[in-house]
Image (cartoon, rainbow, N blue to C red; front, side):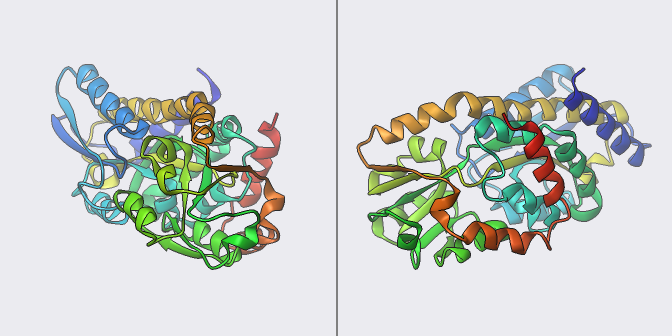
Length: 328
């Protein structure tokens, strides 16, 4: 068993001990996501459900609700906390709104590239952070996945970060992202995924912060003038089970569900590593102005972000050490 497997196994055993005494029973679980049906996360959730049904001999089933059918992530997290929702594949962004240590994953340029991001998420340090979640958030985290690194799509011409000042930039609403764009002098504008295409088309927003998969597959480039390949943040996902639901499961079922879910969220890391460059190449091939930039493009915004989050997350230093140790 590899280091990741040992760490996850130990974490799941500890969680099982903490919620001991439940009896095995049949369950029809509901799993929520914000991503659309074709998305890698949604396909991983469906594969997890199929494997759980097979391994449990049909005792357990999972119905997947993609595309915010059960609400946005804040609403789904509240449902997980009350036990109204059983499971979710959720951005670590939403978790970081309640457990600030997780904001450290969004340190600008923490990861050098998509493969490096995967190594950080598979580290013992990252996996060990999941132990905070039952007490702090009311959920059990079984493992990480991710989306691609973040890029910027703009309606107008952009040649420097100064051109981003004052622009309404669609973001996922969480503090690390808000702080980054505020440091740039932009106007970060939270907006759910289903609204993004039309908002960019009609000028409701001037730009979007997005991963390459959705820029390409959902045609966000249609109404863009400039694509900035910045790779400025990683974007982790976490597989979650309601702690209230977890408490009703037998130790055998916790181990089965935890192991299978961890495998399927982890599989998204390999999917993005394999597809990221292809999506970027196709986006560049659309003929839009295409910039490749690094940390220097953003001026002192990176330093401003670091100054803020060094006081908010106790894990920022530890994750930087992991990043340094896993860089190639």
